[in-house]
Image 1 (cartoon, rainbow, N blue to C red):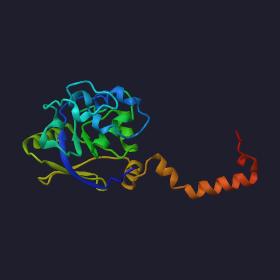
Image 2: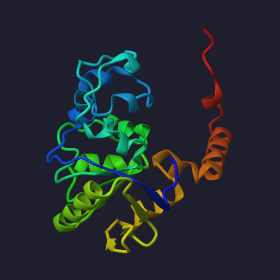
Image 3: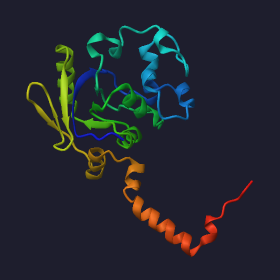
Image 4: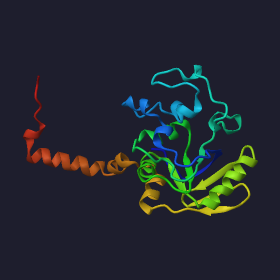
Length: 216
């Protein structure tokens, strides 16, 4: 997965509490066995005026002009500002996939649902927990100033505002290490690829019959 070190990006404010994963990526899009292509259907029921289906041409669908991601000032946003209990509901990993594939690198909120929170780290999407007061301030700033951007420095564990304010956030050391280096579960395992190959070769020497293959 992509490394996360320092990211500066336009902020999109989603001023709703308890946003569940079915709102983030509706259930009909979970039929796909691929890990790509979910970005166009992020917040599908809120972004469009019709009911979306897998494989549909989204460019021809009617947009909801009132939804934040459809407003011109938030086009290209890569930091999502949200309210408490973001990502509640079912445990679908498609939710962080959709957010990442839309273009978001981080989500800032006062709290997250546990499973969604863990899935974000496994897919290179940084969930940042700030206080309610800090999040309120960021919502006010974002709404007041078009083009409002934040800088997130993962190594220093701070969110920096254009006005020079600095908000610190916590992250477990192991998760921080993985995000800084771009390691998902597979990447962590592949660090040991030489040892894995050596073990497989030694095992095959001791048990050569394991190398036999059935011929149909």
